[in-house]
Length: 73
Image (tube, rainbow, N blue to C red; front, side):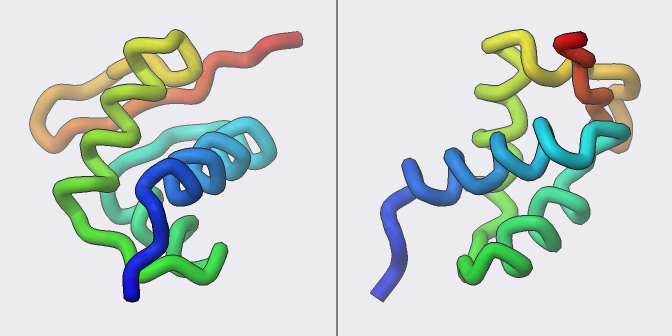
């Protein structure tokens, strides 16, 4: 049984806020696995795009896609 995508999203958002730095699909997958999920690449990329559209991440590279966490100091 898979967990709801919303809990994956919440856990990935939390990881981005806690750790900051640069994020790509591989780091997102690792963070979700560390949180106990069985993530899929496609869903992880969607979550990263959603976080970028909300302003938590900023795309800094197109190929491969890479984001930087926005500091909320």
